[in-house]
Every structure is written in structure tokens, then in C-alpha cells.
Image (tube, rainbow, N blue to C red; front, top):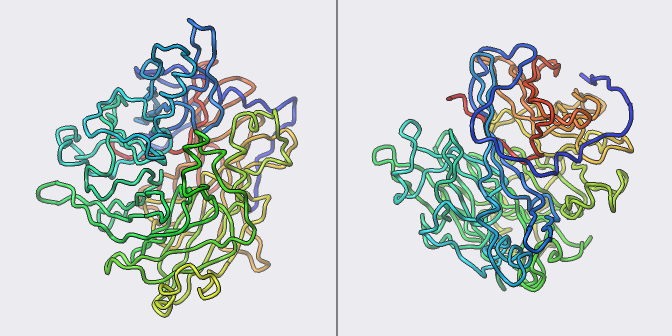
Amino acid sequence: MATETEIQSDGQWVFEKGFQNNPETPEPIELQVKGTIPKWAEGVLHRNGPGTFEIPIEKNRCMFKIHHWFDGLAQVHRFEIRDGKVTYRSRNISKVSDIITFGQDPCESLFHKFSTSFQVITGAKGISQNTDANTNANTNVTLTRELPLPENQRALMSAKTHRQLVAQTDANILKTLDPITIEPIKVFNFSEYDPRLNGEMSPAHPQYDASTGEYISFTQKNGPKTKYTIFSIREDPETRKPITKILYKIKASRSVYVHSFSLTKKYVILILWQCDLAWKGLKVVWNKNLLQSFKPWNHNESTYYYVIDRDKQNHVATFISPTYFCFHTLNAWDENDDIILDLVQHKDHSPVEDLALPALLGQIKTNETLALKGRLTRYRLAKVSENLWSVAAGEDAKKLPSAETLFQAPLELNTELTTIDYSRFHLKKHRFAYGANMSARPDARFFDTILKLDLDQNPDGSFSHKKWEQWSCTPSEPIFIPAPNAVEEDDGVVLSVVLDGTKGTSFLLVLDAKSFKEIARAEFEYGKVVPYGFHGVWKDEI
């Protein structure tokens, strides 16, 4: 299955425009479609990510420059596909005007206002339950349609879906958005569901079990013993009120930056890889940022896998493996008494540092030294019910059972922002994964390829794969849409928002998922760029 799109090598790979300020487009515009989008591929793609990176303050002639990709002010994008046509709109959901205040030093004042998310993470500032939509809370990472809103926000629910679009980040902050206009509605946190969910942090990636209707996540309260409170929220089918359940509270000696976690039909798996906050999280307060507050990498550290039984609501096993770092888990499932889980593994936590804009823009890093190349890795947590004794072992690595590595994709098939067909294969064994890949070309400084990876290995242990790439084009997270009555796992299309750096224009790419050939693209007018975002969500209802 190894096929690759042939590209030219003409000049310098241009990608910097994806990290520049982008004006919002609050009213829908129609894009120019080339090719044919399947009739059945109708719906809405929402995407979240940074849209503002530099903030001029004219009065004092200073420029506030955002240092890290993760800190760009949130902009949400809406692509609607109907009758083969594509319309687009976008909105800055964390506006500059909400942040700038008058003061002795506007740049310093701006920094303090911009640090709201940081203040919430460190416990220096809480989110009021009465906070309105005009907040500078920077919820720029993920979007969900599955979270039932708190009872006091039921009036905000969509009459059709009883849901709203909710933007999230790695702090315990949520922002509701109108799914059509993308206007911010309200900011709140998980303590509105249950006062015990008052931790400063919460992963940007929750999990949703469609079979039970449960939204599952955790809050994290840092301290001498960091508390990870795992919970589920589902909607009562009769009253439509949210029902919140505390599944378990883990107290650990480590305060770890956990961006995502794993879920199966039976278990929640909280993985504490290595990205530890120094001084139990208090160093963030001292440094006034997260980036300089992580502990140095320790090769002797272990990764811990805490297994929580969803039904019994207790801690049933703990596994360990050699240390690594991870942004994104991919999928997990039960296999008899074992747990199989897939995630994108990095050798250390330097990708967090390498996503700073000076590194990405080539000011301090080269292709060879950038550490953005994650490797898809599969683990087995074997015989869970026979390892109940491991709970009593606590964090004594010498006494814990090991997570078994089943495979790891080679470095040249690196991937990030990786997805599967979640509509059919979430919590089930899957075969195909789709992700953004970074090639070995010396001028490649960011993701330049979309990768389809076949996880059913060949007899020699290699991985069949297909790639899409085009000169000077930088893709985003690929989103899979299944065809109606699909038989094969890859019957469908893959969407990705791509920036053509040479033309200085973005387009929505549509690939046939099986052949991985382009079947259509919806182009913006010349000069219109969609900044590089993080994650998106597809709904087949308009």
C-alpha cells in the first residue's frame, strides 16, 4: 500500500504565514470548489486553534508577541458542506479588545490579562460561575458537541441537539459557542457540575462513549499529593439534566501535564508519562509560564498507567513502562482480560519546547534538531484482573507489572494530530490511522505530509502506508468521514485544511480515504490564510 504523491522541489518551503494574525470572517463566504465532493459528505467541520500571534499597542508603540504556538489567541473556523458547495466563516473567540487594559505599562498589563489561563492553572485565579462570554479565557485547543451543559445553562442549549459547541484547553475552563455563528456565549468550569471538580487543570481531550452517552474526563489539582479526579457526565434521557458521577480520585506524588488519556468500554486509563511540573506545580507561579516550569528530563523515570474500572468505580491495577512523553492518545479497547492502547509517543518532552515560535520559524532549530516526530506505539496491559495486587504496590516501580510494547512505527512514518474513524471504531480495534507527518527534507520545518498508516503489519514487521503531499503545502489534522453503508474501514473521505505557502492561500482538501488521492478542494481567494490550528470536530447535521 506504500504510495506517495510526487512533488516538485522548487525553492524554499514556505509556511510562516500560518503563524501570522488572521482577521476573522464572521459572515459566511463561499469557497471555490475544484473537483467533486461526494453528495453524502454533507455536514459541518468546526476547527479550533490560534488566530492572533502579535498584538500591537499603538499608544506606547510596543508589540506584544506571543512566544508559543499554544498561546495564540483562539479562533474557531466553520466549514459547511452542502450540495457539493463549501461555505466558511470564522470568529475570534478570545478578542484583543477583551484583553487590553489601560495601565502604566500596557505591554505588561496585556501580559497579566493574557495570563488568565495560566492563573487558573496555577490556582491563582478562579473562573466565576457568573463569568459571561466576554472573557479572555483562551480556549484554543479542542471542540466538543457531546457535553451536556450544566442545569443553569439549559436555556443556552440548541433546540435540535440539546447541545452547544464547547471549546476547551488544558485548564479547567470551558467556553460555549453558538455552533452556527460561532459567537461565544458563556465561560464556566467543571465545578458547576460538582464542586469536587475544582482542580486547576483538565485535559483538552475528553473522551465520549457513544454507547452510554457518557462524557468522561478528569480534573487535576496540583499540590504535595496531586489529585486527579476522574468523572463522567451524561444526560438524563427524560429530564435532559446532566448526571455527574465521580469515578475515582487518584492521589499521586507527581504533577504531570496530561493532554489526553485512554478509555475502553470497561476502563479509564490515566497515563502519567514524563512532563512533570517542578515544585508540585508551584514553579509555574514563580516563572509565570509553563514552558520553563517542567522538570529536566529524567531517563530513570517510569511511565505509570492507572487503570480505573468504570462500573465498579475503583482502581484495579497499575502498570509501568520506560519513560516517554505523549500529547495524544489515539484509541484503546478491551481484548479479553487485556487492554490494548495506541498513542503517539515522543522520546522526551522537548516537543513542548520545540513548538515555541522561534523554534518553529527556524530561528533556533533545524529540521534535524526539531523533536516533532512522534511515533505511533501500541501497548498491551495484560491480565488486568490478575494484577489487582499492583494497586497496593503504590508507585514502587520494582513491584509493578510492565506494559508490553506490541509495536512502534518507524521514525520516517512519524505522525501527530493523529485520528481514526471515531464514528465506527472508537473503543474498538481499528486498522487505519491518519495523521500529519513531517518529512526528512532539510527545508521541512513543520508538518508537510498527510499520512495514512495501516496498523496491520506486514509479515516482515513493516507498515504499509500512503501519503498525500504537495510542494509548499502544510496540512492540518486529518478528519475521517465514513461513507454511508461503508463496508471497509477506509470507505470514506478525509478532510484537512491546507496552507499553500507559495500562493499564500488556504484550501479545504478532500481525499478519497481508500486510494488517498485528491478528489476535491475548496479554495479561498488569493491571500486568505487559515492559521495552523489544533483540532476539529465533524457533524453530519447542518
